[in-house]
Amino acid sequence: MQLRTNWSLIAVALLAFRADADGTAWDLEIVPLKPDIYLLQRPEPLRQPVEGNVLVIVNERDVVVFEGGGMPIAADNAIRLIRSITSKPVSHLVNSHWHGDHNLGNQVYRAEYPGITIIAHPATRAAMLGPPFKYVTEFDKDVGPTIAEWTALKERGELSERRSRLLDDLNLLLADAKRIAVTPPDLTVADELVLHRGEREIHIRHLGKGNTEGDLVLWLPRERIVATGDLVVHPIPYGFGSFPREWSDTLAGIEALDFELLIPGHGEIQRDRRYLELLRTMLTAMREQAADAVARGLDLEATRKALDFSAFAPQFPQDDMGKRLFEGWWTSPISRSLWLEASGKAITQAEADENS
Image 1: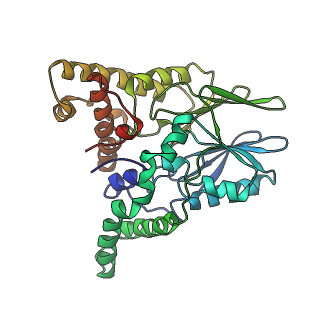
Image 2: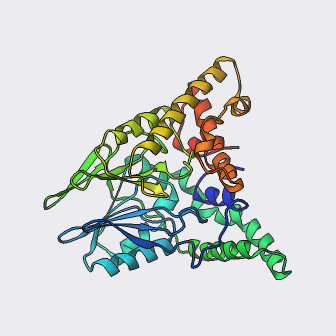
């Protein structure tokens, strides 16, 4: 199976994750972080389909939002919550990277706030306008067969309650996918952009490649909050579209910030550097293993078998679901990037998201 996108995250997880929470997969709750700064977070971070964290910064006259949501319905819900916090308009929306679970709600923000400026890295804009984003039209192909199979089982009374709830979410997602209109950024940031809002500075930075070629982070030095996009995902990292060597360096750049709160692309708020250090240590060790495998002449499949993640796996979820997702979301996709890097082969943005 190719693991290209957030549709692929769904496909990997269909048989692994439960859907036993109330509401839909795109329901969010407001988590106050500091005065006028809020996190919009899914109550159950690991519920499927995936949906990322949204950082909301309320300023004197406007609102800045980090992450556009993974579907139009996700943006609908986020905007409803923002309006429950403030009547001020959203002036800027930042997309951390090109994967659709962070920007497929862009169009909703544009419709609700016509004067909005959407910000991303140039590589993100290029990916959204180019071949990497072709998957937006392929959801039916990727998930449709599972929906059809589970629908038949449900009609026969043979589908579990948990899968029935997930099926409801997938049907809702399939319907919502028809609303998607790819909406790329109007302003690109290759290095750093600073928005000044009174005494508050909002730094939008590209610290280097990592999960993708164009990852952006948002840094609030006064409040000591950093939002990382999928450079950091908790409790299981995403290895899709990765550049291992640069990723380790980029994580070091995040670690150097004097942050108090780290908002990952998905999952729980991090209040120290332990998880960052774990990710960096793992990347360094696996790069060394991949270099050794390539030096011994191993091809991609042999390298995948040779790479040993066992020293790190126990520090991630160890139930059956966690083990399957650690392989599907991390070890399988990152292994390809590790092999390409160690072989001296170029990793292009489209290639980085393909895994057989």
